[in-house]
Amino acid sequence: MEERQKELESQAAIPTEAEYGAAQEHLGDELNRLQGNGESMEYDAVEIEPRITSKITSLDADLKKIRDEQLKEIRERIAALPAEGEEELRTRLGDEKKELEGQYSEKQREKFGLVDALRSAKEWNQPLRVDSKWSFAGDEAKRVQREMQRLQGLKDKGQLNPSEAARKQVQTRAVEMGVSIKKQKEEQVTLEKQAQHIRPAVNYAMRRDQALAIAKEKSEMLTDSWQELYSYYRDAKERGDLIRMGAAALKATEYANENEFFNMTGDGSDAQGLKSFIMNEFVGKKGMKDAKAREKFEKEHDVKIEDEGVGVKDGKQYWQKEQDRLVEMMAEVRKQDFENFMRRSNRLAFGTETAEGATRAERARNFEATGERKYKNSPFAKAFIQENWNKFESLISRGRFGPNLSINLTSGPNYDDLAKISEHIPDEQRKGFTGVLNKIREFGATAGEEPFDHLRRYIDEAYGAPSRRV
Image 1 (cartoon, rainbow, N blue to C red):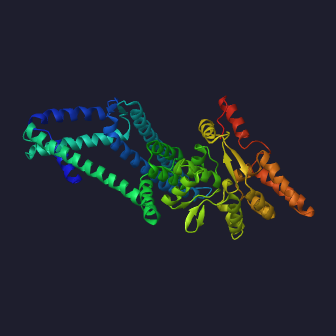
Image 2 (cartoon, rainbow, N blue to C red):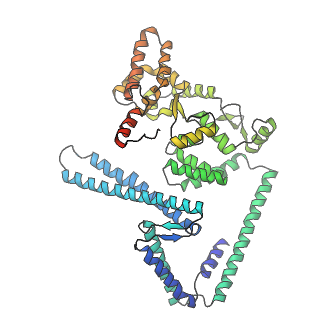
Image 3 (cartoon, rainbow, N blue to C red):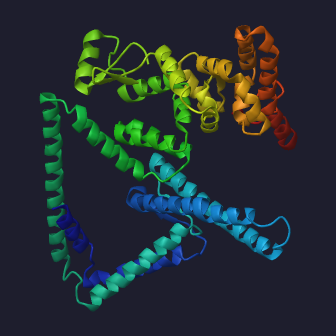
C-alpha cells in the first residue's frame, strides 16, 4: 500500500504540458547555481535532510576506506622500504600519501560542515545553506540533470500529466491513501500498547526484538567519532528514543569510547559508573527505593535490582555487588597469562576516571566544559601490583609497558597510594618493590608532574595561552 502511495505521489509530481517549460527553466537555474558560480544554495532543512543524511553516510564510508585501507596500505609499503635506496618509489608513495591525506581532510571538513549546517538550520528554523564548493553540490547538480532528462523523456513519450485537473485527482488519491496508512499505523500502535497492559512484552521475545532494533540502528551509524556518537545519543534522549540511545552507546564501545559517554553524564569510568549510567539514563527514576514500585518494575522488565552493582541470579539479571565483582575479576585475571593481560589492558582496567563535582549533574557540566577528569587506582590495581610487581621490570625493560598506564598509575596521590603496598611486602623485597614502582613512574616520563603538565608548558610557550586540560 505504501509503495502504491509513492507511485501516486511520483505521478502527481509530473508537470502538465503547460508547466513543463517553467519546470525545466527552474531546474536550469538551479543547475547553474550549483555548477560553481560561487554562490551557496538555500534549501528547506526538512525537505533536504534525507539527501544530506545520505551524503554524510557516504562521506563516512569514504573516510573509513581512506583511513583503514588506502592510507594503511601506503604506510605499510613505506615502512617496508629499505633504509637506503628506492628514493623514487619513496617520493612517489609520499606524494600519494599526502594526496590521500588531503582528500581525507577535505571530506572530513565537508562532513562536519553538513552536520553543522543541518543542525543549525533545524534548531533555528532557517534555510539550509549548501556551499557550492562541497561535493554535495556536485551530487545535487547530477540529481538536477537527471531530473531534467527525466522530464524531457516524459515529454518525448507523451507521458506528462494531460491537465491540472488530472494531476490534482492523482494527488488527492495519494493524500487519501497516506491518511489511511497513517490511521492504520496509529491503530497498530494503540493495539500494541493495549497488549502491553494485558501482558508485558518481556523475556526472550522482548530482548530479541530490542537487540535486533538496536543492531539495525547501530549498523547505520558509520562514524568513529565519540563526540558525534554522543550527539546522536543526546538527540535521541531528548526524543525519548531508547533504541537509538542504546545503539549510539554500544557503537561507542567498538572504539573504546564508552568511558567518555559515562563522563559526559557525570559518571565514573568503571563498573559503578556503568551501573549509574544504565540506571539513570535508561531505567530512569522509577521509584526503585519504593519496594512495591521496585517489585512491579522487576516483574514488568524481568530484571532483579539489587542494592549494589551485573550478573544472573534465579534466571534474572541483577547488579552485582562491587566487592564481589572485584574478587571475581581477580580470580579470572589469575587464570590469564600476565603479559597477555597487560598487553590487552589500559588504564581503565586498573582504575576509574571521574570529573570534579559533588553531584552527577555537576560532574557532567564540568567535564563538558573543561574535559578534565581525575584518575584513581582501584583496589584491584593495588592487589594486582602486590601480586605481580616483580614481573613489571621485564615489561618495562623491553618497552612493552604503556606510557599512559604508567602516568595514571603513579600520578599525583596515586603514587603514594601504591607506595603503601610496601607495608605488605616482605622486608627483604621492599627495596626491589620500591625500585620497580619508581621505574613504572619514570617510564611515563612525568617525574612526579601531573600527567600533561610538561606538554601544557610547551603549548603555552608556543601559543601564549593556557591549554585545555584533558
